[in-house]
Image (cartoon, rainbow, N blue to C red; front, side, top):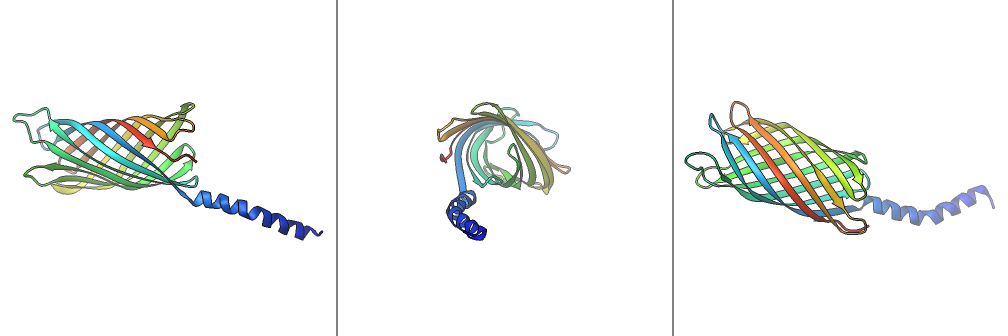
Amino acid sequence: MSRALVIAWAAALSAPALAVQLHAQARWEVSVGASGAQEIVRSRPDTTRERRSGLVFTGEAVATRGRRLVARVRYGQGRVTADTGTPPSPRRNVVEGEALFGYKVRPWLTLWVGPHARTFVVTGLSDRRWLFWSGRATARGGLFPGVESFLELWQGFTGTLSRPAGSASGGGAEAGLELRLARRPLWARLGYRIEQGRANGGPRETVEAFTLTVGYVPLR
């Protein structure tokens, strides 16, 4: 039997396995989660200072494709109530969300880009919305089997504030621990997040959040 025929037979026999492998790499895998966060919002609209706190509940979905591509969507709602100021300012409904596309340059390092927004809704007043297009980096490290630490940093490269209308800048960080049990579809994350938005010549707002997330990921 000639060498060419042997190679042809080997290629034919390995083609199905290769096709299955490529199909698995091309398939999107989705993990979903739900979280509750205690948020603290510190605002400086002018010369005054305000502090609000309350609960915000968020849903998220993370889709991965192969070993490199990843996308993340989060959407949350809640309410924060003023605990400083005389007289007390009205309660604010909070709506926040993000849509990010990422690339894993290393198994432990992911780079992201995309928009995220935070809107404060005050009864009887127009909404105030912060909107940023940002770049991010997430680093992960294993502490012991099933437990990882993570750190995410972001910086807005363009941003706007709706009221008063104008351009804005901002940045932030999130850190915490993530638990994934072997051969179990559930995972959990405990994190601390801080971010700040600054309007040019206008308000400044700082948000801190302590977050507990529980999620589900399909077993492979």
